[in-house]
Image (cartoon, rainbow, N blue to C red; front, top):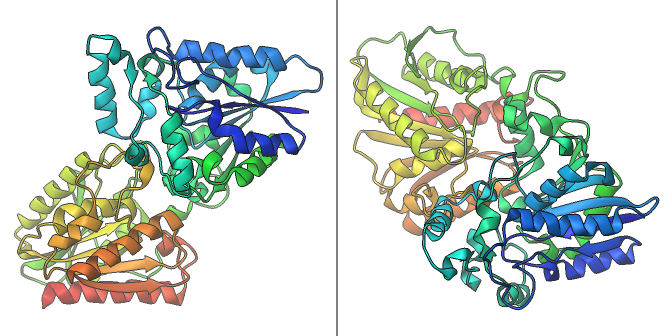
Length: 507
């Protein structure tokens, strides 16, 4: 028999599992929803003295109760913050645990507090400020108001009634549970794991595979044969939004099912390192620090296109983005048509790096405009993937020399788990300031739904404000289609987008 031990996330208790637990039990499983000190009960208990070790002890008590029976496989399920006490407990009882399920949760690390997994920087600052305050009230983080839950995780799919219940039963989170570092011996590394990704939060198997293929050392372990993944098309609270589907996935996870990721370098080259879809001239490049210039044969100052890669891309990735077939392909294509093609490596290595990446892009633009071979009054910016968020800086108040903004399979609004709620990186909002600036948007028909949703939002905002947006569709194209099985459809889309951008530069 499988015994599921369910551990809830921030501000919540065992009550959130009621429907999913009932479905697991109906399928013949034994189910234990852990009551965490300071969180379960009306309004929770006082936070003083409650820390991460307290919650690890709560989980250990349940494991010790159920984990000694013969032929009983214990599967620990940690949602959100709950993965930290789950991993801490599994590290001390690794021999009794059949599997850990990470339910829309991060990857806890030895010596790192749970607060580091909170993606929203303003929320992290709020916790730090409370921790520095004297007084009993400073022992806990108050639970969100009804309209604030979205900042802690996407509420997509949660009914109004369920959201009301979640708010009514929420408890203050003891600060010690967020601030105390997790301590691991390493024993937990031997326990098989399953990740359940909630796409409404902005996570997907396809996104993870892309990042693993980049060679991110922090994600290398995710391609281990003992690690599997499932997706749920819902927000951060699947036990409330789709308990039946969640129960089914948990049962399949316990059985060892799920999608396995391909390790970096396995078999054929990863998608982003395959050849560019067009034959382009092998024009020489000039390297200036983190910026490369591809110069046309034409004489005199020429317009320029600055190509801005996406990410996050680990700092250790080789080749770096400006040397990838996609970036070099676009830059050489532009140079072959008579304009200066520009690529750069910006520092979007993590989701918290958009400020640095934007500063790198701005510096590169100024460098390019200062080159005597460039017509400083005729520059275009072309953004790819998550680099699309940086376009907000240029859409909101476009300078007179910016003749066009282009975006290919872009992310045009921060995804829910990216922690950018209060940032300026919202092209969906910024487009209202674009005025007459032309925008050329290349849309992949087989885009990841979470990204496609941001493009839909952007186009609605652009229509509402009368922005000049041309859409180039690739109906059968995927994210990164330039190196994914090129077709005549995708080739023509690149040609059309380039013709349009260059037309705005030379008009």
